[in-house]
Amino acid sequence: MLGLLLLALACAPGSAQVGAATGPTVTPTFEQLASNVVARSRWERTQSTTAQFTFKKWRAFEEFDGKGKLEERKQSRQEWLPINGVPFARLVERNGQPLTDKERKLEEEREAAVRAGKTPVRSPEASKRDKEWQFTDEMLARYTCKVTGQEVVRGRPVWVVEFTPRSADLPVNKLADRVANKVAGKVWVDAEDWELARLQFWLTDEVTLIGGVVGVLRKFGMTLERTRIEPGAWLPTVVDFEMSGRELLTNKRVHYREEATDFKRVAPAK
Image (cartoon, rainbow, N blue to C red; front, side, top):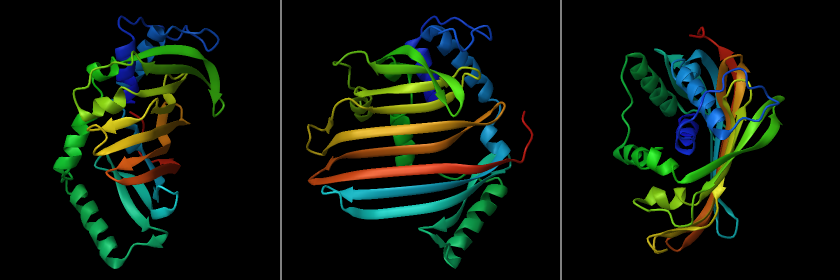
């Protein structure tokens, strides 16, 4: 939701509040839609919705060679639950098999540490990656946005927003900019709750890394689905992305998908 919020801010300077008077049959301007999304996002950040539910999550990762042959497949199942008001992912199955005694012991130790109030330590590489790919006003100002119509997603009316790069000659200050400069996509915003219901984005052109010496990203696409679990509670239910290209001298394609199901409320709404 943070990405949509910042995208709205970047594409809609001087936005004006629409409020409940804007109904599903009246097409809002992007500025009006963005204002409602921003207000909803600010409210949502106070709710900690994920920590109000338990749910199950299935994850799969596949890697193929340049000829389409499967080289690696990993699958896992998790049970998500709140611990001390924070979402926690408990691994229960790996590659279709129950955890080994060693794996189960490691999971129990990890969960015990969280229950004791210890914060998991992120690796320097992960922290650096998060910093490089964080949404900023400078990054998101690269796009133009437009409300293009209305559709229905899972039985609910939504507004469709399309975004594209502002120009073919955008500045490049870091590696992430090379990808961000060639991304276009669509956002589906719930017409009643002003929540992100679906997000899709893709590369408009291939991206070379250090002049093509390190590699070439030829294709990248991602879909995010969020579902209204109950009134006032929206959560991600599907993440799916695929990318292909060349890393040094090796061509490969990667596919990742995760699905969340069986949501059960265990804590009251705030």
